[in-house]
Image (cartoon, rainbow, N blue to C red; front, top):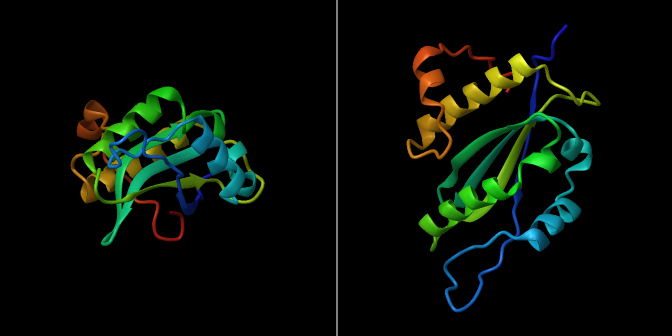
Length: 158
């Protein structure tokens, strides 16, 4: 039976530094990523595949900016160079406010793998949900969003 139940973990604050004299830009580098995994108490989440949501925390809650999926492991995929570039774009845009955070949506217990089709469905569902909160979401799969109808997994699943 395919995995259809997921657990959301987070928010986990992503460490950052402000390089040079411009203290508005929040940069996430290799040292910050290492600190993130060492200090976030993520347990075995980092070894699972699943989805992740990069968001900014501000006074009014959390604003999602990027939704991605990790087919190998969250640790190996959510902080790749291309993702860091996208996150930097957001931190520049939100320069004065907000703290970068990450949410993880993964299978429960000791299950590590999610079938590709279910992982794709989960990512599309999360993108659709994030777009309701933030129409400026960075990752939007336009063709898929236009063609797909979304199934709600219900409150007990996500």
